[in-house]
Amino acid sequence: MSVNKLLALLILSLGMMTNVYAAGKSREFSLDANYISVSGQSASLLNVAIGQFLNPQTVVVTSLSTQQNFGYTGTAIGIGGKYYFFDGFRGDLVPFAGFGLALRQSAIPGDSNHASTQYDLNVGLAYFMVDNTTLDAKVRILNFNDGSANVTIFSAGFSQRF
Image (cartoon, rainbow, N blue to C red; front, side):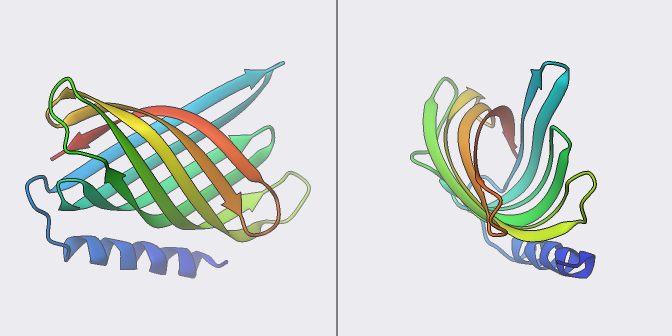
């Protein structure tokens, strides 16, 4: 997958987000990550997403993810969705589910770069610290169509609605 295709997907996603109508809340910024250290080697995943609310519970998102796992590196740009099972307020614990589709560039030391499609399913809980800020915990299942593997990731982060 070329860089031009990744840029085209990002521009298309941003264009869709600027034309979507949102009721109540307008946008959501989310950040989640995980980090593992095993015998001096480390693995990490960082996911940043910006979303546009379609209604108080449904969000269309554009995301950027970076992953470094024991010598393997990958970057993905994607689009997807997130559904909150009810609209939350301060003190609420709200379950959510999400999905995504991304274009991914990855590299393994001593090997060439690989392009693939990344599929993402996730479920989690959002704790509303205040009406517009949540602490999030989720389980993500990633699948890569280049045949590499299914990956299950537990991550934590936050979301800010504005």
